[in-house]
Amino acid sequence: MESSHHLITPILNGKKMFCFGFGYIANFLAPKLFACDWNVSGTTTDPDKKPILKDNDINTWLFDRRHNIIDPFNTLNDVTHVLLSVPTDTEGDPVFDAHGIDLASLKNLEWVGYLSTTAIYGNHDGNWVDETTPPMPTTPHGLMRLKAEQQWQSLCINEGLPLHIFRISGIYGPGRNVIDALRSGTARCIEKPGHFFNRIYVEDIVQVLIASINAPNPGSIYNLTDDMPSTCHEMIQFACNLIGINSPPLLPFDQAELAPVVRGFYRDNKRVCNDKIKDEFDINLLYPDYRRGLLSCLKEEKETAALLRFFKIDLSAD
Figure 1: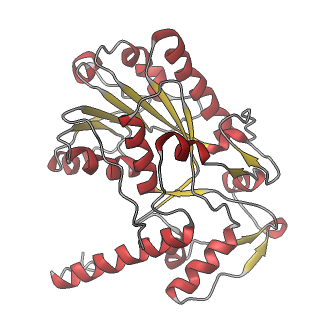
Figure 2: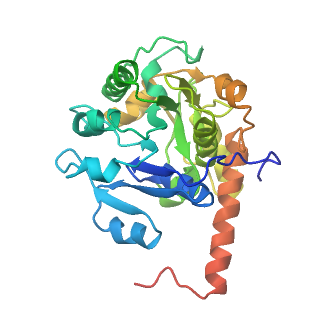
Figure 3: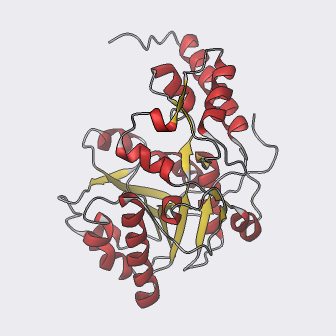
């Protein structure tokens, strides 16, 4: 169930995007750029992904904290746009540590997008936060992301790096959503009254990135989230009704055995405001709430299954 609003598309042609961390978001962004004759390349931590991406006209380099790009000058010299989506680790941001100065020295660079997280806001007891809210992270993940933001901002201020920070809430979309978790038996229905989660559909993330590329505003920070913060069990119940299964048992938060990382998600309680992306970019979200987003995921899943049946592809075979 998609919105009737028009899709935001690149207004530039023939540019060169380099994605540090060619993951879920880059996979949805790349086709939009290819349609405008962009060259897209990037990094991966998985050697097995390199030939697959190469078959899709995407050159990649292996990169992690122990394997830097060997010749960054020649690799990045003519790049015009950079997407930074490598997660921080316990030491900080691997891309900043290895290649921050390299990126700041690029002569053709027009836009840099750093994918951060709304975890940097910390806990606000369910109240609203926006881009002017002072960051107060409570988790190691949030603290490390805030440090990375500040490091990249230092290059923006001191070296003129055309940086844009995108603070993203929970990402979902095809192949990465609560319906998949329910079917695999990994979804848990935790009840914590008054606790809100924020989320955004991957195609709406791509919309905002392209809108920013079309109208760069270096130094800006944007919240990427939909219009409908909600409790976790509300979304799980909707998804169960959608696919016709019983909901997992409702488990009170104080009785749930949760991993420290998951417990951290429940420590922070806030509702994230998305007014800035709407006002600055005149964006209408394709999926302004999880109901429309999950309906779209289910529709795509059914269309894929029908296509596989048409071509008589058996996914259960070795």
